[in-house]
Image 1 (tube, one colour):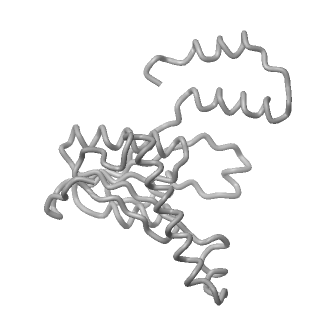
Image 2: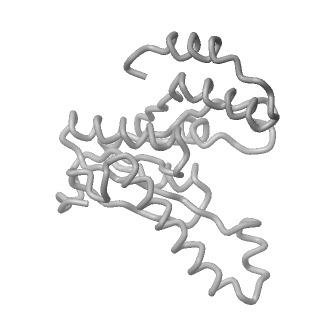
Length: 188
């Protein structure tokens, strides 16, 4: 990332996980940072598999923790490359990899006056909502700064439907598929 400004500079903090929704949020966050002349802070929060309690009980947790953190850094670099074509978005700021649950980590990083927190608001079914907490809802409920929840692209739902049909080896009706993609606005 480019050189940082003094700590009092306005920041756009973006939650990044590597998901399509977080990539859209990262792109929108960069646009907001340019518009506001603010720093861009992409943040990837990670937890060890099985969460912290399981990690504390394992004798090899220190060694494995280093591997998990390395993998998290690689995921953040992949996300930056996918959105910006490289690891430098051309904006001042700092990319962070922080150990912890995504919602609380993002809320704690976006704690300054003038911060804007940007998160992806992915499409979630009832089962997914019941089993996994929504990071965007946690951020909206607990953040002390404005939160921008970026909705998923309309293409994402259409592509998920095609993927499901393909996984179940169901016949694809290309006419329906073409009509679905034609109904998506050009700026999506």
